[in-house]
Image (cartoon, rainbow over all chains, first blue to last red; front, top):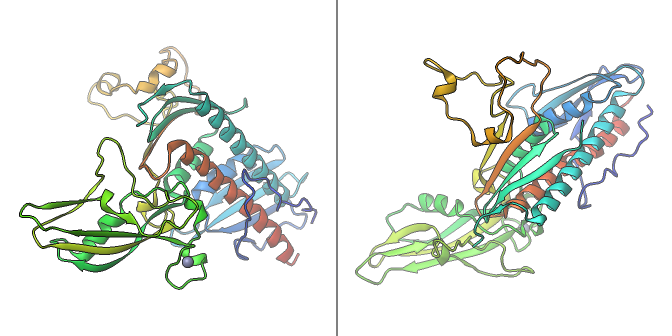
Amino acid sequence: MSGDVSMADVSVGNTEEIAVEDDKMTILPGMASDGSAASFKIKDEDHTLGNTLRYMIMKNPDVEFCGYSIPHPNDNHMHLRIQTYGEITAIEALQKGLRDLVDVCDVVENKFRDEYNKGDYVQEEIA
Amino acid sequence: MAEPEVTVRKAGKDNVDVVLENMDLSLVNSMRRVFLSEIPTVAIDLVEVEANTSVLADEFLSHRLGLIPLDSSLANELEYTRDCDCEIYCDKCSVVLTLNAVCNTDSTLDVYSSDINVAVPARSDDSIGRPIQSSTDERGILIARLRKNQELRVKCIAKKGIAKEHAKWSPCSGIAFEYDPWNKLKHTDLWYEVDADKEWPKSKNCDYEEPPNLHDKFDYNAVPRKFYMNVETTGQLKPDVVFERGIHVLETKLAEIALALSKAEEETDW
Ligand SMILES: [Zn+2]
């Protein structure tokens, strides 16, 4: 596999230590031999992450399909399916999706901070 | 797509009204979901009742105490008890509060949230776990009313948690969320008797968007691009703090997935 980009260094606003359980993610059996299609099982995640990650990954022109599902409401995990056109692997598509989403979050946070500090809006009595 | 834009329309002590543009519905919805239920705060989680001769049952009282908003600006300094080395609770994962009240008069005694004291303000700042005070009602929330000779003596242990576990940990009392106020996208099907336009009140957000032109064809490629969000807090956290911490929670989730992915890659037998 060519998933050699280290994603452990995804920049997070404040660099706190991030730890995950060993079974946070599993790559489900049946991955395409060239890595262009794969399904992932992600523990303890739901629509909060699934929907927006699905959107970000689909925006990548190298990606043919991305979808997520929550197989059963009683089970605390989410499935994510990615199929690419073969230019990149599904794992790389996921890595890019995660990175892009962090970037958007950073932009939104910074813009909010700037706007809020500018104080150029209706200010209710702050008692 | 153009870069995301954020406009603050209004802000106060416990609410912030923002307009988010050039973002996808899914991301704005993720933010809403995280603000509501995944930002850590502190709330009373264990109550040791030493004396309760009031008319309220112990569990009823405990429930009321749990719902009292406590200052959570420093919640990130606390550990979750499940990650802590202690048995039940300790300084690292909890804040101890006490409530002592006795009625000695012929008239009733009202016990308010402002009567709760932080037992050991051990941390860098003693604001953590302090019941929220607003200037409009200085005494806070009414917890119980005692008659002559009735007494309350309780020790409350406040812990860090998120609202996915119990709503008392939610920093938000509500989030107003709207897009496409003219319903041009037809995501909503308005019920009506004769004419939906006349029977439904217009949203105030309509002023921020062009009204639909009757002769325009329906644009089936259109997607929502402008979102109106009003974050209202309980006082546990300031609204701008909710916004920032919420985004951090989301980013942390993404970083966790990235880390988990690299682990899964190592472990998978190709
Ligand atoms: Zn502890």
